Length: 452
Image (cartoon, rainbow, N blue to C red; front, side, top):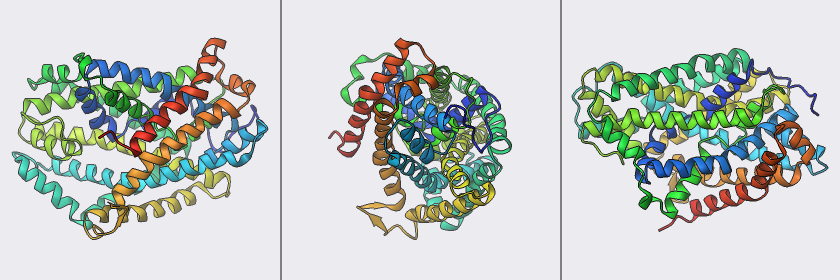
C-alpha cells in the first residue's frame, strides 16, 4: 500500500500542507474563545496545561489521522477501510469516516451562517455604520441582523459560494492556491492588529490577563477545558486531517509537520488574544462576553477609537479569512469521497454538496427568526447541530481513531509511515492505546454531564 497514489493531486510542498492544515485548525474559536478561556483559567499556567494536553492528546491523534490518510491515499472512509483490511481487520472501521464526514457537513451548515455574520460585519465596519455606536445600539443592531432572514440568507449564500468555488477548483488550483494567499494574509493582518493594540493603552492589562501565572485558577474544570480545547482546535475527528494527509508526500516527516501545525495554531490564538483584549480593556469592556465579544463589544470599541473604522474592517477580514479556511476543510473530505468512490467530477460533487449544506444552513439561520419555534430536545436547529457535533460526534470519532491506530493498525505499518525513533514511537503508541482515548472519553463524559 505504501506505493499508492491519490487520484487527487498532492500538496506542492510540506509547508503547503502545514498552512492548509493550520488554516483548517484556525477558526472562529481561535479568535475569541481560546484567548478568553486562557485569561479566565490562570493565564500562563493554563497555557502550560493546554500545551501539555496538545502534546499528549491532540498531536498523537493528528499524527494518526495523517498517517492513515497518507498510507491509503484515499478519502477517510476508504482510507480507514483499506488500512483495516491491510491489518487483517474488518473494513467496517470505515464507518468512523462516515461519522467524521457527516460531522463536517453538519458543522458547515451552521458555520456558514456565522461566516455570513462576519461578512456582514466587514461591510458595516467598512461603511462606518458602527462609528460612535453605544453598546445598547450595537446589541440592537446584532439582534436586528439575526431577526432578518433575508439578510442572513444573502450572506450565508455568499459564504457558501466562496467555499464551494475553492473546493471545486481542486487541491492545487483551489485549496492550495487559496492557502498560499489567505494564510500569509491572516498572519499579516494579525501582526497589523497586534501593532494597533499596542497603541491603545490597554496592552499591559491584556498581556497580564492572558499570561499572568495564577495557579490558584488551575482547577479540575480548567484542566478539562484545556483538554477539550486541545482536541477540538486541531480539527480532529471529522476526517479533514485524514483527507489532507492523503495528499501529503511520503518524504515529509509526519511528526515534525504535525508539531509545527500545533505550534502555529496555538501561536495564532495567543496573538489574536493580544490583539483583541487591549482594545477591550482600553474601552472598559467585559472580556467575558463570549460570542457577543466579537459582534457587539468589539464593534463598539472600534467605533470609538482613532482609525477604528480601518482596523475594525481589518479585524473582521481576519476573522473572515479564518472562517473561510476552516469552512473549506469541512467540505473537502466528503467531496473527496464523492470523487473517489462515486466517480463524480469534482465540480459536480462540490456544487451538489454545496446545495445540500446551503439548504441545511437555511434551517440554521431560521433558528433565529422564522423557525425559532422548531426545536430538537429543547434546542433550536442551530444549537442542536452544534451540540451533537461538538459534544458527541467529534469526541467519539477521536476516541475511535485513537483505538484504531493503537490497537488495530499493525506496528510495522504505523512505523513505516511515522518513521520516528523507537522511543517516540512507543510514546505515541501508548498515547493511542491508553492516554488519548481515556482523555477524550473524559471530555466526552463531561460534555454530556457538565460539572454543576
